[in-house]
Length: 312
Image 1 (cartoon, rainbow, N blue to C red):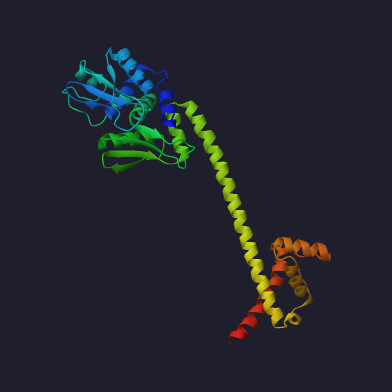
Image 2: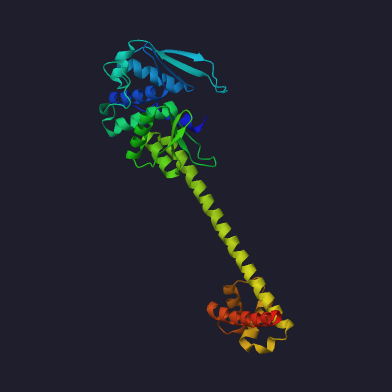
């Protein structure tokens, strides 16, 4: 079972009030239904969604629906269910806020359909059941999308989502509009808003695991980068020492700097901090990282002088 399917099957089993079911049905039919003067048809691969729609229509409006399995043109092995309503269409669509009293399509749903927070959540459930999907958090990227045909509906749904500060965005597509969320935390919040608590727990478990794994990888990368930097720095210092030795310049260094030179040669892979600790322990003469750096700078300056004389 896909993650999207598991969310839909969870939210259609939420116990809802009549006003919430009306908002949910309105959203589903607006975004999934094909409406004519004689009938409404809706399609889905999810049997649980079919049962929920049929029962809700019967319980609230005493509307009977016909359900049949039709050919699935999406190259999916799953059955495709078609729900058809041809009983008193105008009355149903008017009550759902899809048609006005003259049987004209309403570009946006009336305020009374989404009058409160619970109705807004229910409307978003209906939209998601009809045209929504969320990537399994185990995949490489976080992504939630709603594919909506009409521009006014897309803008309206985006506004509903952003009431909850989800940072939902719209992208124009060849056949309609895609509302999407890519931030993991916001997607998790959206699933909470839908009421899919089990799906939220699964999402958060995977997200926490991925975040820890990514943090570990970043720390490992930082550690490797630091190691690379230490090795490069030490290699450069050894080159500088080699230049001084080739030019018989050791005698030009003071005793403490000569000592540092010998320790750098003896411990070529040690970091500055490690080298300072080694010298302090072995000579019983404490030296700080800053003090050691000062001596190494003298080695660099002398090597630079020899290199400059060579080029001149």
